[in-house]
Length: 250
Image (cartoon, rainbow, N blue to C red; front, side, top):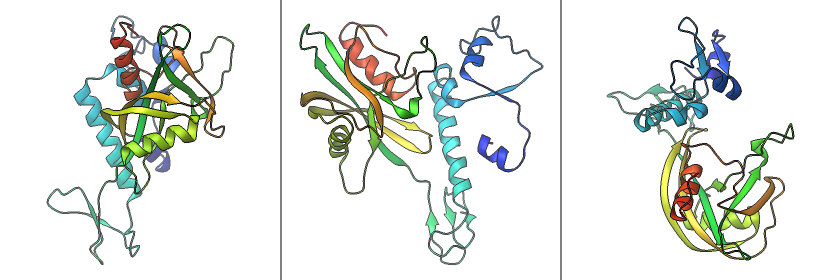
């Protein structure tokens, strides 16, 4: 059951823990001695907060379940004739229109995410381009660190993955790239994306941010990174891979 489904159907839910509460209860380190929630209590924890603690196989299963639940909730009528749809027989993962027989399958939205590097012009230390997106939120206290991430965006109709990388980077930070190469992918259920990870080198141009998307972007030394996405995300994996090649442990 998803949170949105429960709210829409007036289902009473256990407490939903925020990130700070999860840490205070000792639920992020699998340490039973520090777990202060108690055996007689239960609570929901956001999937994003659990990713770092879950085995890869279980994480993939939960990701798939979240995407399928959302697809079922969003696919209740035929997109051609608006007739209510029914589940396909014989275990096929499809919604079928009983009138025009149109089959609707789960949709996956391809997104590129790119780690862009260059040597520091003064010191030669390897740097990586990181950006603070508006969706990460703003700094509420002087002690709170802003989170930075990689440049990412949806693939548009009719373009290759490599072209999407070049376009998104040009749109968001106004620089050109070279040595673009695919690294790995990750299903991401927010809402139903397939993240396609790339690496590239800075070829030229000064950073000019797309202000409706970003509040700041810059090249950071790998030895002095700001707060970055959490372990378990493809963004962290791409950054960690580059750091490891430079002999740096995150």
